[in-house]
Image (cartoon, rainbow, N blue to C red; front, side, top):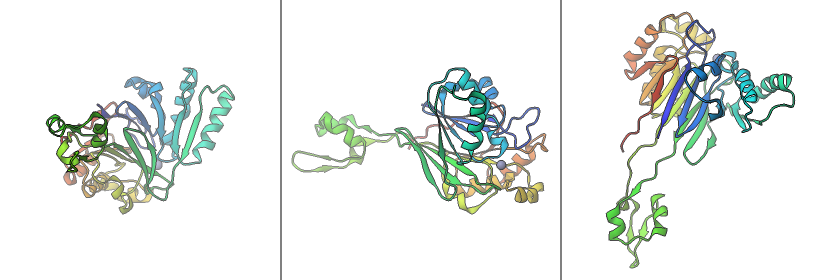
Length: 309
Ligand SMILES: [Zn+2]
């Protein structure tokens, strides 16, 4: 089952002729999460075949235009297509004021679905969503305005029961789900057969973290620790380190340093400044520190592979 990221936009504040502002879609086992929604997101969704009706939850890191200008266009299209499912938006509480004014101005009472706003906490880590298969956390980043990153975690995959052990101990069907979920088995003569003897785990649960926009900061390293895949903005190369500091953005070197310190599996970098027609200087400095780095491009599809335990 898939754990797959599609890149819709890789530019920073100014779009270029071949780059769109930030937006990504993460598919976790058939749940599609839209992360940031820069201008043109809906066009990119069409181009890369992400159905509008698949998106039920949108996660907005912060209220700079290059991360939110696509919302009203996307919502308008959803209205025109007759959507009737609720749409959930996780963001700073002020987004509701900005967005509902536009939606109400354009569509008054004709909106056929509810938009449910979930305000984020910018002071500490927070679990913001959970279902049977996935848990999502927000955590504060270090930008000019309140900004959150997000961490998406697949729930641990339940183990299989060993057939031979089921027969050996004659384990009744009613007991089996409980054992799968972590329980031991007690035989009729009172012996405890531990969970570990009865089960076999196949795969490690997968995870992805999203950090945009931010300057490098000690405070969020723990929040991205050990993820399989980390997206971290790298707006500039080291030659613009001072500009990165002033504008609360990161360089390729910064992004790679976070990846190395947090011991992540792979690093994706994006949010490239329009001043870089070619992002290879940013990528090269990152690879020197963290070789498993990739510079993203519009339309990239990145799979987080299942790993055996
Ligand atoms: Zn920003």
